[in-house]
Amino acid sequence: MCRLSKCSILFRYTLFATDFFLDKLFGYTITAGTREERALSQQYEHSAQVATILGRGCYTHVMNQQLHHYALKHEKYVHPRYILEHDNITLQGVTPTHAFFCVSDPDVNVYDTKVLRTINTLYTLY
Image (tube, rainbow, N blue to C red):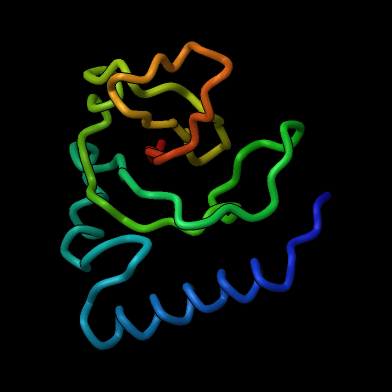
């Protein structure tokens, strides 16, 4: 098990609180988008979320990736086919409820082990 720094914990709680108030006031959250987008994401055709990583907390190569390890900024919901249609997306991790993918720049060779590859993440609901 890993320990989170006070700064990381504070950042995650601040993001959670901000999302709570933004949702109540404007129907929008940083991590999941508008209420309309979230409702649409329940349909398979819109069930994959593209998000930018704002920060990452606890992480080891031994543990599986978990959604709560990341502070994410919602970009859009897309069809899960999006993964198959883009060569710059590779599998990063799998949990019982999510599959995490790395989305790199199209001109980056994702199979090159020397490249740092966690720029954006895309996760789909099973």
